Image 1 (cartoon, protein in one colour):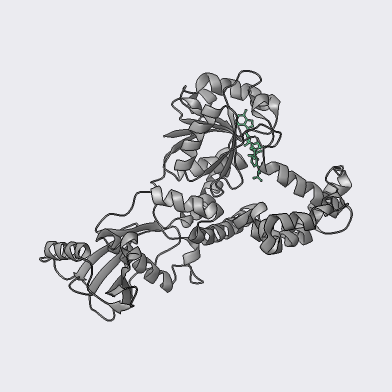
Image 2 (cartoon, rainbow, N blue to C red):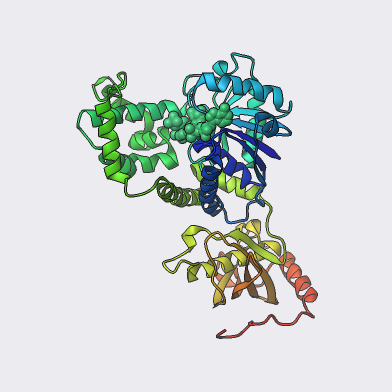
Length: 466
Ligand SMILES: NC(=O)C1=CN([C@@H]2O[C@H](COP(=O)(O)OP(=O)(O)OC[C@H]3O[C@@H](n4cnc5c(N)ncnc54)[C@H](O)[C@@H]3O)[C@@H](O)[C@H]2O)C=CC1
Ligand SMILES: C[N+](C)(C)CC(=O)CC(=O)[O-]
């Protein structure tokens, strides 16, 4: 699949990374002579962040090219994404050309934050709004607005690259989410202008409180809970009247005088000027990955999108029981993967091995499982953030209640980085006592034992010390 990215700035760069890291070939057209450098830096951050959301490998990265003109960029494209500056006089001629040049089947999306599809198509272009959120390579939301069939085709594609298409049924300036962002932004500008709060105090007011809530339950579910046992009706009865009190100044926009711009920019420099934009992006990305990984456990919000996308990715197949990238969060003060995560990788490999022999989620739900009773890790070589990590598993014994596994962890370059030897016992989850495995699992283990009978014991098995 091929994506053409027209305009490779903040948002075009993010789109390019999203497609590329999901295995698409990407061609970028941007007249800025600095575009290649800027995209390279965005990609570097994206490669460090996006795979860290997943416990399985993403598809191999696609190819990246820069095209000198729109014709070269659009030819053979399956998706063309326009991300040029937010001005109709720039967008209109570009969208007209894209419509001429792109294949009939291609989705043509515009990243516009505020223009309605009827404004974009006014001169005959075939385009829908596909409005992303920064960083596009991590945040799943895409607001789709416009022709229903075109949006439906776009939605199908977006899901394959781990995104969450939200169909905005009725066109409106600034779609759905930017209406909120604008409201909050206006109110914040007033608070600074009126000397009530600094940019830093406003940011603390968001991130120490309601910002945390919104990532997992949104607005209405959060307020339902805030209504106590009586729920939403009580919440509305209690807080409805304040909507007509002078709590907000939303109807009014402060003028961007030089004085106000200097005040806000000066406070922002004092707050965050000690870090470069790329450093701030990396900090933001690491935090987002941590939050989204936490949400993945409960399947809430953006974490549910990651979990569903991960479930659709190809699984490791025997003898490979783990294939993933090492996330930043697994590294420590020594600049390499911390010891605990070698065991985590071994544990995930055991889980996959169990699935492969039929001790899967349904089997566990039926009341039978394995418990690990002993592990032995040998650390053989360093592993770094971003390294591909693969485990191959040998069963040393699968008779009776015992399951004795030997995992070898390999880096992407084929170097053995560790071995994790694990002894598991089969248990009845009701009595919490050991018991024999069910017949299907016992048979799968017996077949594997027979197939492996002539293999030599792996080097390092049963060994203490290196
Ligand atoms: N920055 C943000 O937070 C978000 C922006 N958007 C939307 O994305 C679009 C792009 O915004 P940004 O990436 O922020 O702007 P940007 O200024 O970072 O990037 C725009 C890029 O378009 C290029 N460009 C200008 N004329 C061009 C042409 N004729 N052909 C190809 N490329 C051309 C520029 O060289 C620049 O690299 C806008 O419509 C904006 O509303 C959407 C979501 C968030
Ligand atoms: C400021 N903005 C209107 C360009 C923001 C967006 O469109 C979405 C985002 O990423 O916040």
